[in-house]
Image (cartoon, rainbow, N blue to C red; front, side, top):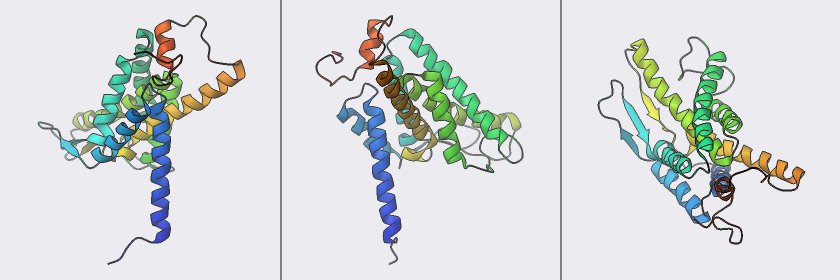
Amino acid sequence: MTGFPVGITALVIVTLLIFIGLAHRALDRMRLSDRGALAVIVAMIIGSFIDLPVPGARYPVTVNVGGGLIPLGLAVYLLVKAGTARERARALAGAAVTALAVYVVGSLIMRGLPEPGGRYEVLDALWLYPLVGGVVGYLAGRSRRGAFVSATLGLLAMDIGYYLWLLARGAPAGRVAIGGAGAFDAIVLAGILAVLLAEVVGEVRERLQGGPAVRGRPEPLLRALRKPDLGKGGDEE
């Protein structure tokens, strides 16, 4: 029986550890407890092996539990827990902007017709979508939660948009796999990257100004910015 070389096996293990560490840090900063963040990561990994078919679709459509349903559920949870209605509106508007930006950038560097699921000349869609989605998601959402919602819902909208594109063109064949790569899908990676950007930029800004800006901010938003398990000064909900 032929096994994987030791080097490749070690690389895969290191990659998984780095991903889990980054994902845990990102989720941990979005009003989730340490256990809650870890539970979401485990659910994403387990859910990566489960694809649910969507009945009644003209083209085959599947939704991956780990890469599609769980990020969607988390985004909805964060919207409900948002500090203000303005934050919710900004996150949803950011999702629309993210979806548009990913489509435009993908179309500009793609060979041939501007099809959302084609081949790219300089960067594979697996990395292009999370990179653009994460950056635009952060810029549009600004807060950690808003960045995650903008990035994940924006990429999810792109998958749905691909299905609508197939319908509009009357393509003879096509397949849509929403979150098909599971825990390593573009939807998940974009959300994590957006939160990490918000984390890094936010930390730098707070250090430069001597702490988080609180003047003029409503109390519900200030409570939402705190981790629930910090104890003193933490969120009491």
